[in-house]
Amino acid sequence: MDVKRAKQIYESPDTIRVTLDGESVWIENVDESNGMATVQVGSRPANTLTVSVERLQES
Image (cartoon, rainbow, N blue to C red):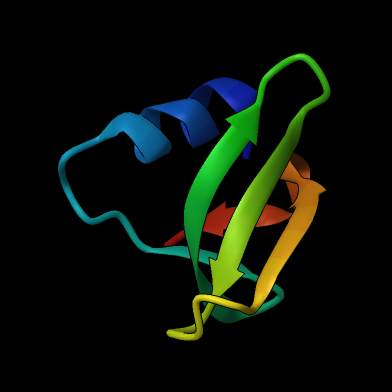
């Protein structure tokens, strides 16, 4: 995924399925200047990761 699409998904009022290494994630923030995204893995709010948006897949 590219930064522009990650930002669109983050700002969208719709629920768009995104995965990281096959596991569902929610995009919580997109750092456009660095090409990174903070995501929540699964349904556990405390389980967050910051990863390259290139690792994210839209399903």
